[in-house]
Amino acid sequence: MSDWLYHGEPFLDPGEHYGFVYMITNNTTGRKYIGKKFFWFKKRKQVNKKRKTVTVESDWKSYWSSSEEVKKDVKELGKGLFTREIIHLCPTKGVTNYLEAKEQFLRNVLEQKDEYYNGIINCRVSRSHINKLNS
Image 1: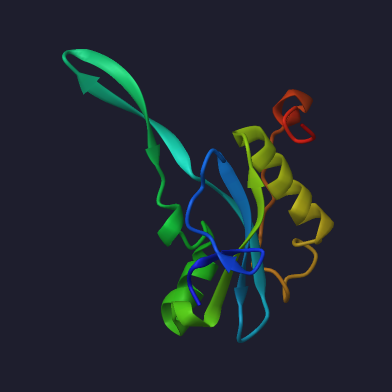
Image 2: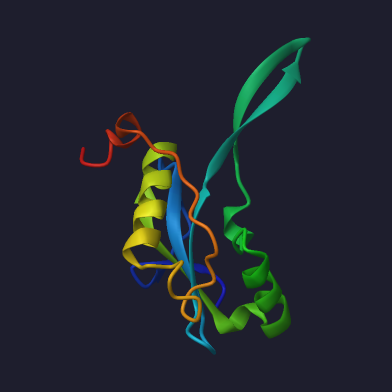
């Protein structure tokens, strides 16, 4: 299965969400990867000799993680042997960053090499970034 799932159902429309935290599972080994992806990004564009910033949809539908090891396994084994699940839908970039790191720490991804592909936890989050978390 290669489509994104959210609560067991195919996920197709990000709506107003900014990003998501996900888990990719290798169904043959059970090994997982916890990561994040943004639905949107800002792009500068020249219009009538003026620079404009426009919001563009990312490649989230076809995204298979930033992990080279995950991408290698997907290429070798085939997309059908992996499950892509959305764990959290997030309203802002800060909340997305925070929840990714939180999931990675709670699951001890760095301490369980046989269970998780993750090799690094990289985050920088302040309290102001997560204001929308509980609202």
